[in-house]
Length: 151
Image (tube, rainbow, N blue to C red; front, side, top):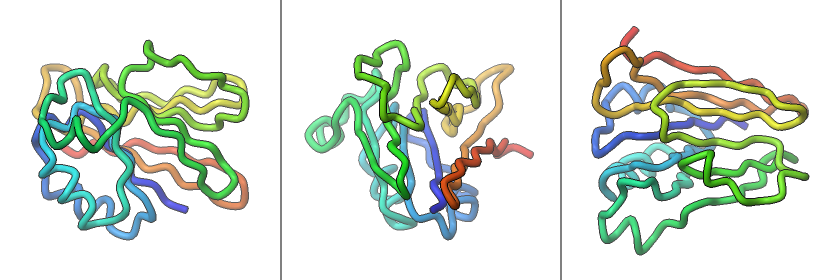
């Protein structure tokens, strides 16, 4: 199972994402999407799970998406939300937490839980990369990595 992970697009979906996510089984968008068009375009690549971010006010996004999602994949539980500070679930049974908001890419293992922030794939911010991520689940093992789009 290969998962493309993206966040903080703020209405900008770069063409390179289509080649980076080619062949993924699922795309996860961790909020601050910007417009429903971003989700529609991601869905043209693969099934997409997305959550609302703090700047998402597009009527169609608000109607269709929730603040968080729990997805079970290949024996792993993946919880998605935008701002990690808003987490209010029992973490027992959760294997992977995907979040955004900070625009800083980060992979952090805390006990049995992998915290994964793909960074921001939207407009360039000073001193921060433009990035996405991939999470691969194979034979019970989770392998995450970050991709700097600008390189």
